[in-house]
Image (cartoon, rainbow, N blue to C red; front, side):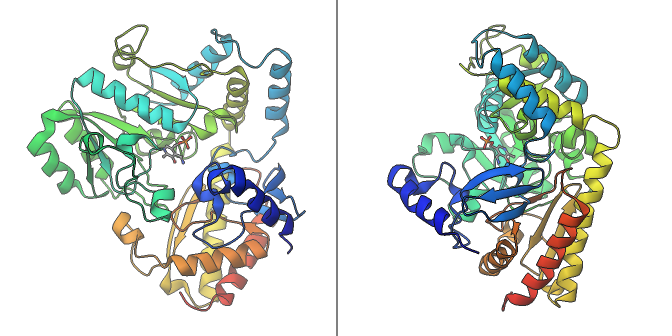
Length: 432
Ligand code: PMP
């Protein structure tokens, strides 16, 4: 496999863009490989500038749940582009997408559009603080909520990849308002809430952790978090930027039957264009300007191109059977990778996780239930596995601390080929 063009472009990119990329994990730094510069994508496949073809399990980190360049989404974007790409004034499209989100997600009565997941969590936190008139925020270790100052404390995703728990550039005065507790540890949360519950504006969490690999809530955990927060008037924010519209039409809150006060979205609702959203109880959302005192705004928020891509994506997702198909494909992939590891004789050194169309193989023999157990993974072995897989045309996340995304466009053949590649790759790597 030649990657000469990608290599040359990466060198060129580094002259003009810090690290050569516009988002750190894309640089393939932790796996020690050359980032592939992508030329095009269709369905479950992507092609790089050297003409190599890959089965894609990154799917733009989640948005491409229908696969790349879905014809109906592409058409909707084309038609809208002819009518103009941004007006800075309200449109019917925004009303339509907002209504769809409200209808689909149990905890959302009103919703505001923004341009990224980061903006959604940042704004939701400001709203929670404004509404409760409290400053402190509780987050869970290893949950990633975008690069918001106060949320880049013990965060997952790229920070876990690069071993940076908190970024320089965030004043201690900001970070001191963020309290972190281990995920799946209700006693730790209870202790903080018992001590200073009336200073805490909100608990923000990924209901299923998907930025430190994949970590599921233990039985009763989400219920207890809901109970403890409600008792103290602390708002519960579900960051459903990954789980939203993926685990179920109404996201993790529908899947687990727990209703948060506020929810954050991104990725899928933009159908591959830059979108985020946050929503929740009308009473809280009406605290936002211009109705209420909490300021929040955006030149391109509710952008018509992004709205049509999101509307079309949700329309397709809502068709009967879509989520069953996604679950089946996700399961087939995850179970196949596990059986590949068994055949290669390495399964006992790994920890396998799968929920609907999300999955992850941790290179550790520990049962992963929080960030510290995830961190026992052998990231060098993951890097070796990643390199073997990409050589065989299977494009996984270039980090142990991310998940594999399966889309409805992944075919049976794609999945079988990927499982075969996994078996060969597990056999090829020397040490786990
Ligand atoms: N929250 C979660 C759970 C995420 O996974 C991400 C991004 N991966 C974000 C927030 C931030 O979204 P964005 O990158 O669109 O700012």
